[in-house]
Amino acid sequence: MMGRPDFSSLGRLTVKIGTSSLTDSASKLDERKVKKFVQDIMQVRKGREILIVTSGAIGAGMGRLGLKERPRRLDMLQAAAAVGQGILMQTYEKYFLTHGQSVAQLLLTGEDFTNPQRLENFKATLRTLLGWGVIPIINENDTVATEEIKIGDNDILAAYVAIHSASQLLVILSDVDGLFTEDPKNSSKARLVRVIEKSSSQLDDILRRAPKKFGGIYSKIVAARMVGDHGIPTLLANFAEKDVLGRILRGEEIGTLILPK
Figure 1 (cartoon, rainbow, N blue to C red):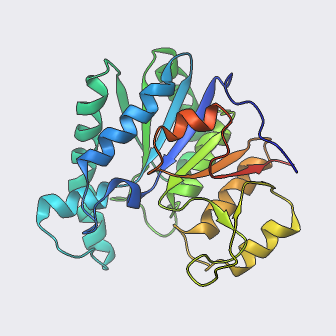
Figure 2: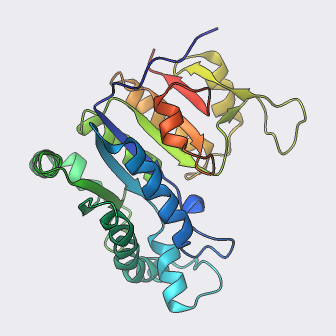
Figure 3: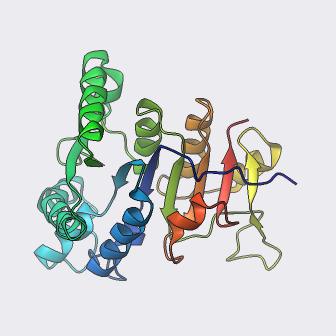
């Protein structure tokens, strides 16, 4: 059986955190979860460069606007994101500043990766921020993203960020423990896959059974294969785990590791 490589010496990683990990049962931003995430980041920050790809802007906007249900109309989603993005960043800044850590907001669209000049500008900005010891906090610019230029999913955005920042590991945190052989909600035989290669037939089977929707397991596997093509492993783990990032970097058997082979 394949073992876990030693990640303790990694110098740069991209960490993506999903909406469900930052919001409550009413889909509104939960500051306690943001605080935990910041603590998890800072516990592994020393000696490393960390890039964050975050969701949660719409949830933050819903809370401020008093919306009881997530909007379905695009214009309402974009408006909620416009209200919530500032709140999300203020919340991050509040908790990172308690550790003396500076952060920066970067809002991107698909054009930042498809337009060569914009891509170079993005990479130059990242180099400067990381050189200053700043943690970039990245999200899609939902307010202006149209069908032609939107990335559409933060798992995919995280893959682009990991690739173009030359990260050595992509960590995707969500509310699931990792990849399972079968849907654990429907089968008692389902077991957690600890280590898998991105080109394996087993991963093909999991992908084939996964609902073809973004934000779920499907997009996480797509993202893992994207970064795997560039030699970057992906670790899928449950954000609710205590000291989740520290345990990942210490090589503990947590979540699912997708190897770039």
